[in-house]
Length: 115
Length: 117
Image (tube, rainbow over all chains, first blue to last red; front, side, top):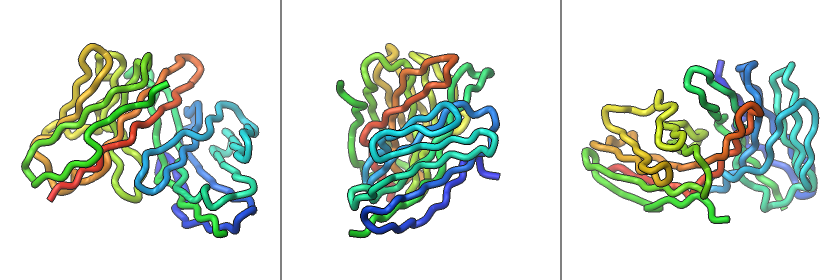
């Protein structure tokens, strides 16, 4: 089982619709969760962080976390063509042996928003 | 606030040649990461520094890759000799880890696109 799984897509939605991106993770010790947006040819950009169960809203973006189900999602409301990008889910946990936090990324979901 | 700086942005080399990448993290960020991202994949951690020290290099191919972070600020990643499969984007990231709270927000530089011919 992969540590962080995402549907690779592409996910295609019309402009103005809600885009729903999903991510599951295998390590129950994971503590914090992040969504990165990556435009083609660019580096990942942090857009959402979530640390506790429930929803976190920031503008048109809502992150949802369910630790019991080991599931994280990102909703993008009123999707715009400029939202077309690959969305990477990243999961963070603490490794006491190395005294460090480690981020593990999924492969990403390609989102296309059609005008 | 200035972001993570990397250079060069692009590099083309022949196999068996050597190459080096440079990274300057966000000011005050003690933790620095080097990732390799192959097309269609998520970033894969190569090495993680906390100040000057290495805390995780378990996925670094140590027979050909090396990295250092002198004075706890800038870092360099070197490949010698390069192989065809090293063609990828090399990303540097930094973070201000808040221990005990699981906060590890990482910010990425623009990356270096390496092509090995």
